[in-house]
Length: 180
Image (cartoon, rainbow, N blue to C red; front, top):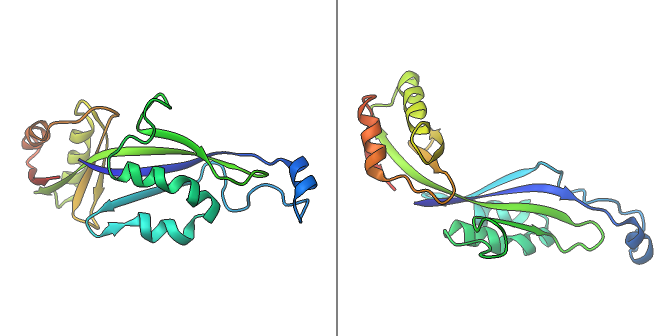
């Protein structure tokens, strides 16, 4: 099993009364860095390590200080916030800017990496995607032509056995060389 982390900006607040009372620029306004709906995917598989490469410098330092520990935990396959949220794969957190906080939804995404043979054509890749996405417990399949593998994302708290994946592929003429 492999893990990614999806971070979504779900809200922004602006406390103008606090800005007026406490800030050097009393009209600072809402956070200019993030917009509601922004999404960031972090991964650490193979030669990808976007936690270090994209986290530092592409995120607001105040926000990164607050959310990076949850992202790192998710990338290691850990429970982001056991017994705090109704789903231990997910956490709601905010930056520590007291006058214009940004609220983030942080989700651990569980997936398997599938190296396949016999899926060189677009038709075979389409069949592969459809077949994988019909398996019980599979949320989605992402064919990564650039990397030479397929990411098979699992529903929360549901791991699809490798044998079931291999069996499904036999019916469409695609083989599984390796599953990680």
